[in-house]
Amino acid sequence: MNLYKKLLLAQVPIGIALAGLLSLPGLRLKGFYRTVMFLPTMLSVVIVGFSWNLILSPLWGVASGALKAIGLGSLFAPWLGLESSALITLSLISVWQFVGIPMMLIYAALLNIPDELIDAARVDGLGHFRIFLHIKLPLVLPTISLVSVLTFVANFNAFDLIYSVKGALAGPNFASDILGTFFYRTFFGNQLQLGNPTMGSAVATVMFFIILIGVCFYLFLVQRRIRRFAF
Amino acid sequence: MTIEQRARSAGVHLVLLAYSALAIGPILLVVMNSFKARSAIFGAPLSPPDASTFSLIGYDKVLRSSNILTYYSNSLIVTLVSMALVLLFGAMAAWALTEYRFRGSTLLGLFLSIGIMVPIRLGSVAILNMMRTAGLNDTLTALILVYVAQGLPMSIFILSEFIQQIPRDLRDAARCDGVPETRIFLEVIAPLLRPAIATVAVFTIVPIWNDLWFPLILTSSDKTHTVTLGVQQFLGQYITDWNSVLAALSMAILPVVVIYVILSRQLIAGLTSGAVK
Image (cartoon, rainbow over all chains, first blue to last red):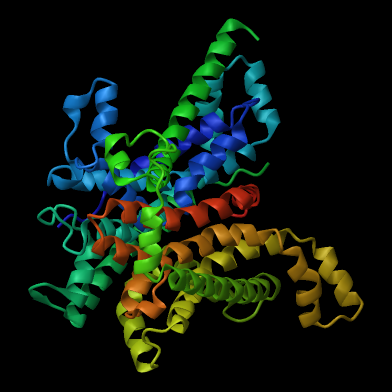
């Protein structure tokens, strides 16, 4: 059983990169970019999952057509239908949808950095990129760690996406099965399997302990070492 | 501006534009194609509908063969009632936890903050049993109760941060004038919390509107389905009828997008106001 989707953590670095670009001084059209990039986050996972299901479907041919247009037609495969790539594709859909949350929170933290620090670095001759890497990034580390924990917890809710795209059986051949769908099948039963509340509760308890370990790791190891910078 | 600076700014815009296109492209594609006839959906999926390909057959079918309007009103009732209760109880709890020191207040605060991190879904089994025993199975009340519990920890956290930013002098001045505590909360603090509503909305209301899990396990009849569940079931039945599928998807997308575009300034301001750091 596939316990966890590591790829989803790609969400945080992408969010950091976008927030870094958005917080550059003097950037025009900022409001437009923010609004558009946050839009998918507002939509229901079911709707997003099904839309991507249609787009990636070989029947409609939008994805293969788009790839062909840029000369990569041979790369196309029915990603959601292959055992080897179904879970990765679902994770990328989820990253696409929820990248807005880390982006916004980190963006807000970046805006709160006082200008004096940035100006001092610029006087010392640092470029935008090195200012970001050496000055801004360390200052927003507390936010980044909080966002990572939120992402970690939210990923256990990936049930919605997989249930709406692949159904409770998490096909093909259970390739996209996660604890959420496993819990649903165990508790409510599915096709040949009878529902079993006791075993369902056991699965939920295991999920609870996994999350608790993650949260404790954050609270006791990460949070304690981070000093909040007072401006 | 030197040439180098100009090139760099163009590069930044290129990256941001490319990502914006990636973010909005799939949504546009679905909405655009829902207004087209079947042959055009497959023939030219990337072109916008024109006079010869325009068709509303999908919408017609969705409105006739599903109770989508009932789903909308269910979703609206559940979301609005939950939001009102979450805001009321959240503000009251946040006020008590930040303003008064009483026995166990730290413990209570810690307990509530665990609620932010541990998803309520893990308690589904117990919730289902509870609702069955209370006879609330397949009612909107059950959904509202669950969503209030789900939304409270986060909203208490956000509202406490807001209350801490309100200057102490305001409450002290009111106290000196002999105003009772309930009136201080209702007439001094509560009006000042208005800007927090947007932040609370982003973190608690949007997940409620979009939730699939609890409607799936707590409601069974067509009368109590929410939009998310209703559309999901509709899609399952009509999977080969592309007109209806695209129309149903668009009908679920459009209201959210319209509200989002109208409120996006407040929502983003609420999100970036620094309450969650």
